[in-house]
Amino acid sequence: MTSLNNPVGGHVPVAGGLATGGLKYAAEIGAETVQVFVSNPRGWALPEGKPAEDAEMREQDAVSVFVHAPYLVNFGSPSAETLEKSVATVRHSLRRGHAIGARGVVVHTGSAVSWSYEEAMDQVREHVLPLLEEIPEDGPDLLLEPMAGQGKMLCARVEQLGPFFERLERHPKLGVCFDTCHAFAAGHDLAAPGGVKETMDALVATVGAGRLKLVHANDSKDDCGSFKDRHENIGAGRIGEAPFAELFRHPAVAGVPFIIETPGRGAEPHGKDVATLKRLRDG
Image (cartoon, rainbow, N blue to C red):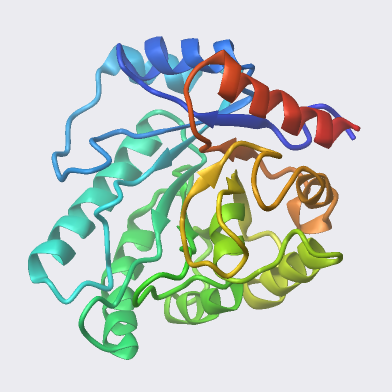
């Protein structure tokens, strides 16, 4: 296995600029791939980028880049205002992702909140399919990230990605971001013997080969099936190190980047997590 078969990196802060701040932090933690926010993750403001920072990010080839859409996005919401802002925000994330050469834009699969699953999913189709159609051929993929299962989430277990792919016509720009903590919280026991293989086989059976584009590598503070989205550093939680080594070796994960979103900041927690994953990958 080559060292960059599965690039390992992290979500990086971008204070000082996407390239100036983000790439500096990437180097500090030994990242081979990065994920960034291009707007406030807990707000609706849609800032323009800085052309020089965009160009530097786009033209560098040291790390592959992904964008995470803000947490407020919910295409299943019964609120007309939330829906309108979700569409505008993901359109902005895709446009900014294209400008910085990002490979994918991660978006949470959302919640039905106060209405039915079918109503929410019909709305997903109506508003997400046009966004997929707008993405240029060399633009980023839109990556659906299943959630931990709390409340009226539209998708937590990997099998629940099926209706999304059907309603979105298995669009060629549609992909998946698999979060290990979310999957574990939703009931996929990655720590059990054969648990990783069973989960990844189910993912491929549901969405098809080649749709997994990114792994969020996070250990879990809580037990399997807890429905609690609380990330832990690699090896320090309920999943443990061994399942991550298994994940690297599953055929569905060949070439897929791994991004940590673990607690802490800086070379000690994040650099250590990146180093641990590289060891498990290369061992």
